[in-house]
Amino acid sequence: HIQKSSPYVKNSKVAVMSTLGGFDISVLEETARQFKAALDKGVVTALDLGGYMKNPDYRALFEKLFLPGLRWVCGNEKELYWAAKREGENIKSPDKIREFMTPEKAVEFANRIFETGDNRLELINIHYGKDGTILVRRGKYSHEMPSFHPPIKNNSGPGNVQNAGIIY
Image 1: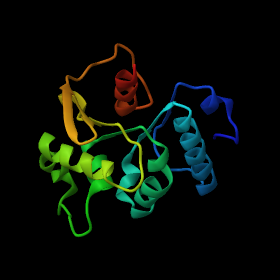
Image 2: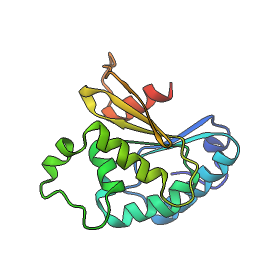
Image 3: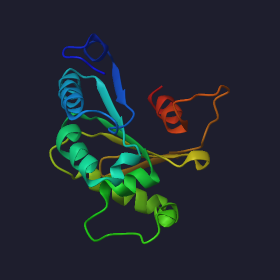
């Protein structure tokens, strides 16, 4: 829970939120406000999309509240699909999303996010688990990175470990 004028965001070089789900709207609104203010001061702000992008209400929150205050977006190929899919564009079986989201298709979907609304995004980090990562910069494919395996167990999830590795 982030409070107004939180020193945790105000004094940071990087601020990352790992999902929009499970928070009261007032917390999300305040966090989005702080992210925008932090971005204005040069802080790298990032959001890991999380599985909640499947819900149209969370997708709308992402687009309207969070995009204006983000420099980076992180997520796996399924989260990217749900965040950037167009109306009427549906994969009949959610199990087929990974097969559908080839690296080329992932870059296309990442560019859709860059083109959404008024935003200052610079990087979209798409993680494919054991298959590595694709980094996409505005308007172009950046590069692929191999996966890495930290020597410790981390209960925050593999996506968050991967995000931390990219930020580092």
